[in-house]
Image (cartoon, rainbow, N blue to C red; front, side):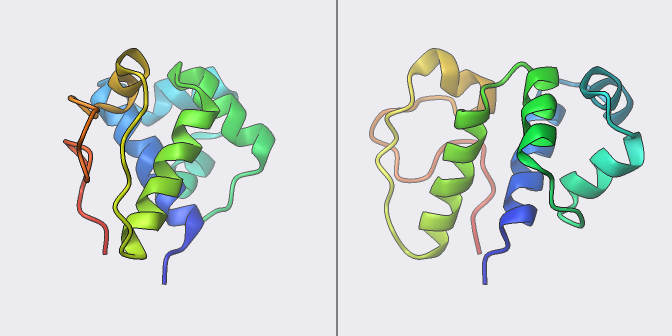
Length: 112
């Protein structure tokens, strides 16, 4: 069973790590405690929409793009093939690489 808080945490952690940023840097920019951000990234805490927005702002990635990535992962876990139509400039935020005609985005861990 897919747990949304884990998928959200995985996506946020992946974005942060690809940016080469520390938990301390992002937690400070988002104005959330380092421990709480760590728990969100590990899927142990369910973040409010306000907190998700603050974290996304701190990471300079649109909230809709993070939620889209989570949605795609859930769909893939359900066995669906997702056509990737995210614009190239925004896909770079998530480290997807080439974005057209891919069933599974590059650089993402397999779901399941």
